[in-house]
Image (tube, rainbow, N blue to C red):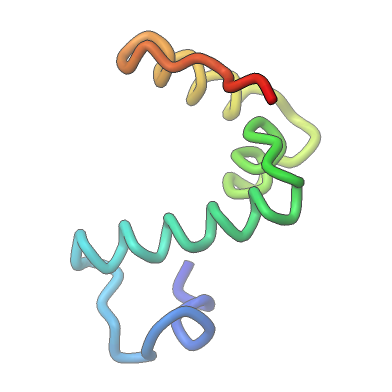
Length: 75
C-alpha cells in the first residue's frame, strides 16, 4: 500500500525490500486488528479490503491452523 509510506515510514522506503514490506504489512494489520477489537477475521478482511466477506479470512486462518497448530486463545 504505497499510500501508507508517508504515514508509517519514509517516502523513500522501498516496498520491494522484503523487511520493509513485512514491517509495513504488520503495522497495517495491527492497526486493523485494533480497529476491530482484536477480531482476527474482521481484521484480516479489512486488511484485504474485503470487510463483510469471509473467504480471505477463512483461508488465512485455515492455513495458519494447519501449518502452525494455531488455536484461539480464550479469555
